[in-house]
Every structure is written in structure tokens, then in C-alpha cells.
Image (cartoon, rainbow, N blue to C red; front, side):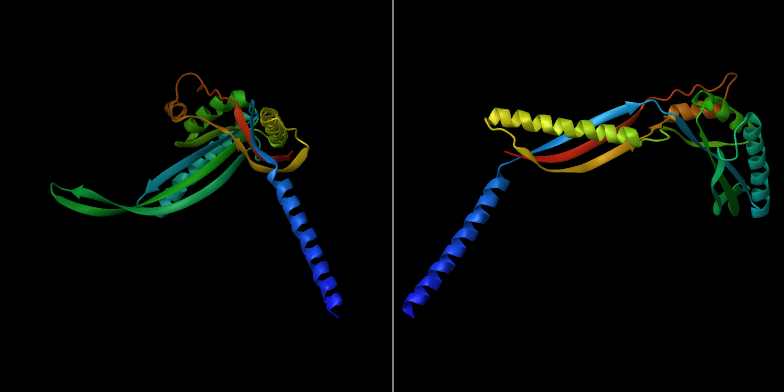
Length: 241
């Protein structure tokens, strides 16, 4: 009976030893990790322009403000369509009717509260003919658009550039790991893990000065020159050795 108990204890100790050795081996293997951070940036010329214009009208009568806005908006739409844009390229993005109060002087000292109604009709143009952006803006402003919200230069399909940036970021992470391993006198055995941390795509947005010139108008078309758009990717990789 005593011998059987001794065998049971020995067997339990053996199992525990094997388990602990396995845990320590895994921990030791996991500790032999080189972690690196890879990043890449890819740029390209934009092939799509998005122009946000708005028609703003105000009046003490909501009905009059709406009617004024509708008339100007129709004029702007017709001018853009006559220029050659399609209905898919010219779309209403938002429409708002708000009221606000102003205190106006009545006579020398008295003030009177006046309620105004403001109508804002936003139109977004999506065009691939980038050389005509300046002409389109001038045309819209002359037709009645009185505010330029933004001009973005984008890519129709940024997916290919995103994948290219990820590939470059991954290669950089591997090169960093190999340099670290060489300096430490070890050799990388395999890729242990890798994950995409962030992939961003930033369209080029026209500067405020460019928008101001566009609103000012002039005898010649407003010059709008976009820079390249940027795609950035970052990865975190772990390599075992």
C-alpha cells in the first residue's frame, strides 16, 4: 500500500515537472522576440476633385429666404450643367433653414430685436477634370454661390496605394529586425506575429488663401494647383530568434 502511494507521488511529481518544463520552455521561446515598427508613405497625383459650394440667403421672412435660395440654386445648377457636368457630378449635400436674432439700433439709443431666417444650400461637385476646377468655381460664384466650404483633391481608388504602403512598411519592419539581430549576434528564425496598426489616406485640401482668391474672382480663371495626396501605413511585427 505504501509502495503504491510512493509510485503515485512519483508519477504526480513527474507530471508536474514535465508541465513546468513545458511552460518554462514556451516562456523562454516567447521571450526570444524582436519587436519592430515599420512605417511607409506613398504619394500620388490626385485624379478626383470634390468641391463644396453653398448658397446662403437670409431674410426676415422664412418664405422669402427660401424662395431667394431656390432661385439662386437653380441658376447655379443650370450653369454647371450647361458647362458639361452631369447630374451625378453635381449633387445637393445638405439644406438648412435656421433662425437667429439680431439687435439693431432704432433711432439714437433704442434697440430693436429682429429675427432673421438663414437658408444654406450646400452643393458638392465631384469631377475628374482637375484642370477645370478653377473655371467651375468661377462659374458657380458668378451664378450665385456665395461660399466655398472646401476643395479636396482625392483618389478615386486609394486601395492599391494602401496595399503598396503596407507592403513597404512590412519590409521595413523586417529589415529593422534583421539589423537588430545582426547587432545582437543572433539570427532570426521566423516571423512570430504581425499586425496592421494604422493605414491612413489624406486627400489634399486647398488652403484658405486659395479659397479666398476663388471667391474674389477675376478676369482669368482662378488657379487651383493641387499637391500630391499621401497614403501612410504602419505595422508592428515580432520575430523570434
